[in-house]
Image (cartoon, rainbow, N blue to C red; front, side):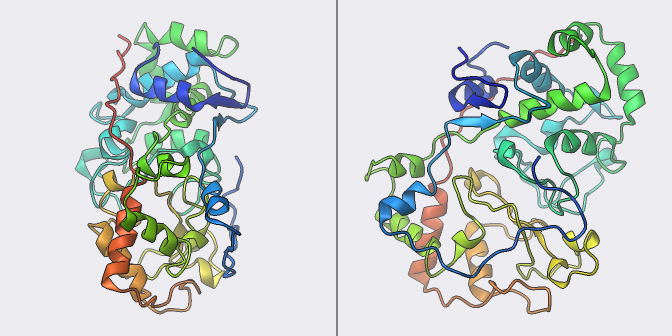
Length: 357
């Protein structure tokens, strides 16, 4: 069932089969001040076809050289991802905050961790994380392997020390042969656990949405309102300056003027004014299932999101130069929302894995 599989790539069809149960079962650095620079120069493709090509889906998933794809790793990673025994309370899994039912988020304004403790930020989606260049809202983690272990150990989240976790997994007989099959040389270690979860997370890829059908030539796939919204997205509204490419993100950091005391990337770049209150630009795939929005979950609807950008946000020294009143009409706002909704695919249930005993 695996097609065009290499050490660095996996066909999207195969990945979606793994996620939804049809098959058997970094770049960037979290250094102080490091971020992508956003240019104000507008893209000016020569034709609508050229513009569409900028958003065409890739055909393979990238995997790092030090953690290439294998079906054994992905299958093990899926079990670990949905296993609540990875938390100290045995009540939370990775999937508790990053659920396929909510666009691989949790549907809450801010995440809830150990002991029902409210976390400070909205749970980011895992969808299309394989293309991520840096992780977490503030960019403090450099790759998915680091991200996989972060919440497990965090006191406010799953609160599970790694040595205790390894002891617990060691008491579950069926896990040992799965680790040995996925990692013949290393077996069960914190590093191989992280690699397995990261491998599974890289297979979590958004399915084809109406927008993709339109990109591929089906003019009836999206409405005329949405087509006008696409033009606004790439023109007057300037959305594409940060939300670029097939996953609609440049993985950069911007202060978009939300009235929050959270300084985000500024914690890791204290001397860089533009990084104060700056947060990672999220991708927009599966956006209709990912409400509420923003790093603090403060905006409940896509309409509110568009209103915020139209207003220009809170004026302060760190605010992005891109943030300024746009002067959108009510009709233009409606068209933008219509376009954004075309980025969500039909929900296909994710098959729950059979957990080891």
